[in-house]
Amino acid sequence: MQPRFIAILLPFLGLSLGGCGSLLAPASAPLTYRLNPETTQTERPAQARFPYSIQVATPRSEAGFDTSAIAYRQQPYRLDYYTQSRWVDQPATMLGERITHALEQSGAYRIVLAPATALPSDLRLTTELVALEQVFSDSTTPPAGESTVRLALRLQLIDANKSLALASGRIDLTHPAPSADALGAVTAANAALREAMPQIVQFCVENTPKTLTSTSAGNTQ
Image (cartoon, rainbow, N blue to C red; front, side, top):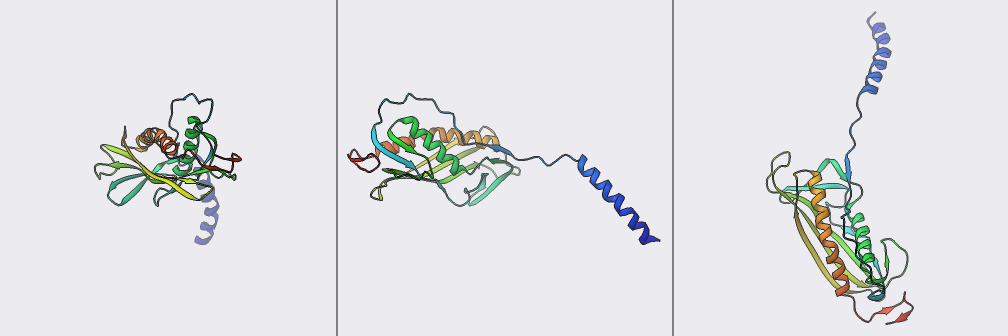
């Protein structure tokens, strides 16, 4: 009789569990954030400073930052990631979008080409995300106390027609995080990126030669 009792009970047990499962609240999805610093709208000059086209190459990331996870560090050489908060995309991808926008707003170049655009250009800006992390001063669990966000970028401006590197540079910024959590990291990261944008534009402008063989412009400057 015992096997028969189990066989009869199992369908009801499955129905009961299925009903309970439908009543349980679904696991909460991670919060998502953007790298999208609010920048002051500047008036674009009537004529571009350089008659050249520039393409923002798809930015690369160093190991550990090629992910949509929001990174923090409490100990040297070790990276951890928030589990309930993420970037909406990999930071390097969003970085390329913001650099393209900043160069367009500057009006310094005749044409600004976005990453992955399959068109020839006179200049190419390559960017590598070296670090984007929230650094804590202590190792308590969960993270607590004061923290800063470090944004580090490696830049290279290239003469695309000659495949010649014109200049290399590095930007390394830190901003205090207003809170010891993912939102604090996001807020400070956007503040750091807001400071970095004009520096990136300045790097490009200062290292663009006055004369450059321009294929996209259709003539030689």
